[in-house]
Image (cartoon, rainbow over all chains, first blue to last red; front, side, top):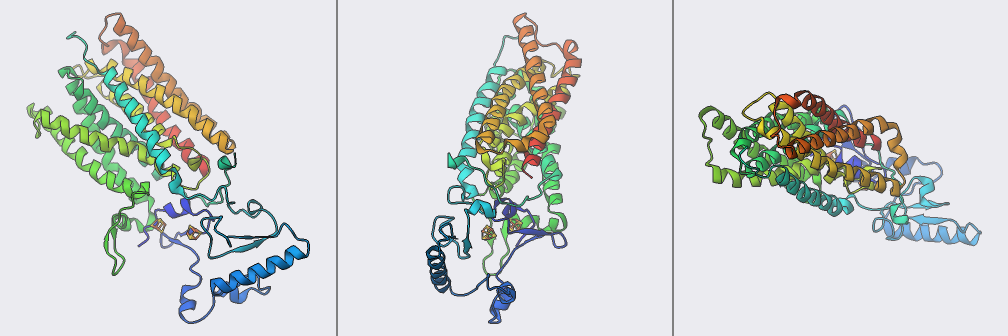
Length: 149
Length: 305
Ligand code: SF4
Ligand code: SF4
């Protein structure tokens, strides 16, 4: 149960999560879980007048996206690319996008910098451990026994 | 080189004042525990009064930590215990994620609270009837275990920031070490401030300033590495508005170094770090160092958000 610590907000690379000031808990898109339970599609896909947002079985969406991309490429739009379709970004996303430029232009992490926060666990703790060893030695040197003065 | 590209698309978690002061007090409490332990290990009985003050000062500094953390949760403050207990129906149990510094930190704080409570009570009792609750050899082993947890507490706050996707924080791996060095320096300054008028603990005054000097060398080195790593990631510009805070942090480090040098000189000249001669320096330098500890954390926390 969410207690509002906001650690997820610091971690989410897509800036998806927000905090609800009234409840003090984190909120994000659930693909309209309640509508899905009632056999409906998410409200955004239903409402989008240009069919830019599509919802459905992943394999079908992937196939449709591949066809669309091939069509764009054949029309000379060589910069068109699917984002999140393959496993280059976070091992593949179940929500993917058709982009006409590099991901950074759209405010999306690219294949190089799509990294999990836990990548820094080892480096962070290791630096702390080395500092700790040096600091303990420094403390022992400063407090070493000196005469009886 | 692309490895160092920093394109952070995250939202700010709005970790601000409560977290800043939590980091501050956690650093001081943990640093004081480590120093109390090290003072006991000096083997000189003249360090014992200062060691006891260190353990005593840990207590209020630690008690305030969970208060600040729960206050930070805002309206859902009463759900703090969800950090430790999973209340999902059908999936209840304890919450522990070793890869999440926040999860490990919450458990660490609980364990640290136990060590602090026992050691502070022991120090209080020792001051009153010249014998604590734990016999000294056992006490030392207990203190060592507590100091290991304390080192974790002082440093995990930095690792917590590093293990995120936020600019600046996740661009460097030094924050854990940096917060530890600065926490130790701050607690040495705090102890010096507290014992400056205590003739029974005066013996440790110069030694604490000397230790503070060593910790400050470490801190300074880590500040340099911080700027190098953040610069390599391309997010150095975020530090510019916070340069005044960095200046205060560096002033604290400089104050520690100057004071430590003075005490080293006194020592070589045969002085034992008398109380009277350094009283003013101790107040000025300690306050500067403590402000520096706060400013350093503020600069790091605010520059990302
Ligand atoms: S959902 Fe986010 S805010 Fe809520 S407890 Fe989990 S990490 Fe914290
Ligand atoms: S699943 Fe990924 S994109 Fe969605 S909220 Fe979680 S971290 Fe953010």
